[in-house]
Every structure is written in C-alpha cells, then in structure tokens.
Picture 1 (cartoon, helix red, strand yellow):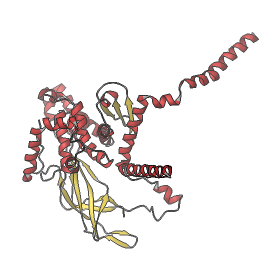
Picture 2 (cartoon, chains in turn yellow, cyan):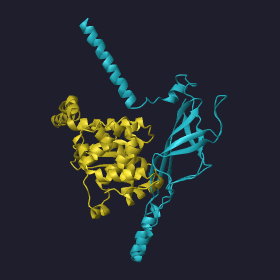
Picture 3 (cartoon, rainbow over the protein chains, first blue to last red):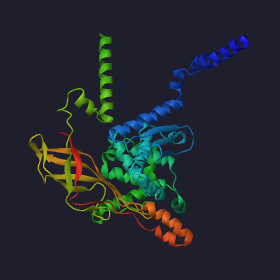
Picture 4 (cartoon, rainbow over the protein chains, first blue to last red):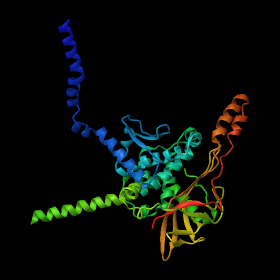
Length: 236
Length: 184
C-alpha cells in the first residue's frame, strides 16, 4: 500500500512539476520570435498603434492577425478589435499598404464607438460607411506619416469590378468606385501626394491610371464646374 | 581614427533615423497627470481651458454649398485668457475645413459631417487649434429597419415604403459653442 502511495505521489510530482519544466523547453523564445505569423501579428499591432497614437485617438482598439487565407479584414463591434486575414496581407507589398487596410478598419471602429444605433445604421447601409471609412482612413494614414496613395494600390490589387446587379446586392461598393473616391479625397485634401507621387512608377498604380481615365475625366469636369457645389460624381 | 569616424557616422545616421521615426509617428504623448502631480511641473502642464468657437452661419449636409475641403468661417465666442493676458478676444475670426461629408440615406441612415484643421490669427502668426467638430444627423435606422420588416410581414409592400425614410442631416447651428484646444 505504501509502495503504491509513493508511486502515485511520484506520478503526481512528475506531472505537476517535472512535465511543465520539460514542456517549456519545447518552446524556445527564439523560435517563436522567428515564426512568420508572430512577426505579422507584431507588424499589424505596431502599425495599428502607430495610427492610433499619431491621430491621438482616445478609443481603444486591438489588432488581431488571422492565419485564414480569406481575402478580408474586418472590425468587430463586440470587442472593438480589428482583424486582418493572412489572405489580404498577401496583397500588401509595403507597410504603407498594410496601414491602408488597418486605417480603414480603425475608421469603422470609430463609428462603432458612436454606439449601438450607429452599428445598426452601418448594417443597413454598409456601402455608405465603406466610403466614409475609406475617406477617414486616408486622413488617419496621412496623420501617421503614411502615403495614402497606397490605399489605391492595395484596392486595385484586391478588389474586383462588380457589375451593376452584383453591386446592388453586395455589402461593399464597387472596387473601381472606391478607388476613385479615395483618389478624389486625396486630390482635394492632400494634393501633394499626387504631385510628387512616389507610386507613379508602381505597376499597380499605373494600372489604376490606365483603368480610371474615364472616371478621372468626370472628376475634372466636376472640379471645373465650381458653381455646382457638393455633387457626388457617379463613377463607373 | 577610421574606426572612430565610422562609429561617429553610424551614431549620426541612427540618431537621424530615430528622429525621423519620431516625427513620422507624431509627437510623444506626455503623461500630464504625472508631470503635474509627481514631477512638480504644474505650471508647464496646467490643464488648458478650451477656446469656444461658433459658426457664422448654419452648416448643414442638406446644403449643396458645402464640399470636402471647403473653408468655413467661425469666430471665438468668449474672451480667451491665459493667466491675465487676453489671448483671443470675442469675435476673433477662426477658419476650419470641411474634412468629411457623408450624405444621409434611406433606411434612416444619418448624414455625417466633420470639420477640423482650425486656424486662428494670433498677432502676426497663424496658429492651429486642436480638435474637430463631428456631427451625426438623426439616426432613424433603429426604428425604420425593424418597422419595415414587421409591416412587411403584415402587409406586403408597406414595409418597403417605410424603408424609404431617410436619416437626418448633420447640422452645426450658429450660436452653438464648440470647444477646441489652443496649444501655445
């Protein structure tokens, strides 16, 4: 009986004390630091907090990296978190482009902080709030020292051109329209980024210029007609 | 000598890179509470009283006059003192810029209006006032959406017509006071 008790105590001792000690050896901190996903999590958190602090936003937001390969990022109302999927990050070539994704989601969180009624409005008319988040996202990027043209670049790579019927039923607006709204916002408020454009030779920005020629003519016509006041251009 | 020179240049390079990072990320946020109460810098970090400003005319997202980037005229609504010195007299002009207009929509979704980047003349200098005015119209989405669904179940078609109700326009009225901060 005594032998059995001693054996039992030894097993308990082994499980409780010895096992965790050995287990901890399996997780070398250096290995963790070198893990790519951990690096991405750190990157997203750093960019997110840089935007929050530079804009002096007094709202708490946390940033999560999700290893799912879905091409998406979203802001969650419940815990005020911003979640970015690995699939979307594979479209980002620079910190500016990651900042564009995160700034857009932070803008959504600012709306969520307005309260539950605002969240309901966002559910009913998501397209309006997507445009709004794009515009505020540009402002947040500029204040944090990022180049807002990166938002156009990352959108051009990741968002498709929806047909009218598909767009009507979609929760998000047409990618082409969103890029033009962002372009218009930068043109009106931060023209210096377009005048000395560090993305001018970027292949994806070149493609945007190629595909948005018609829309940019519409914008020019609007800006030439100064008496018209606030008119939303119907981009294609 | 060469080693010393390369070390010196490395320090300068690192120092300048760090300085650039600091300016890009924005200024360092100071714990003013600790500065005031523990470090004895009460005068330097005294809580700044806000400057109250008011618009000269009614600003509404309903009006087509307003567009993003438009300069809006405000004025200082109350005399602003720092200590005994009158810094801004009542009526001093202030300009602000329309940062965002997002129109109201069906389903009771309200309009949004943000005005920021306030500038005021202080002697010969133009200085920035920190803060922004953010206005949201009447949010009717809370009852328009559910009412539409309920009526839609009872009488087909009526529900859809309820959904056409729009949210309110965002307005900033003359006489209303808005607080912005003057950092000298």
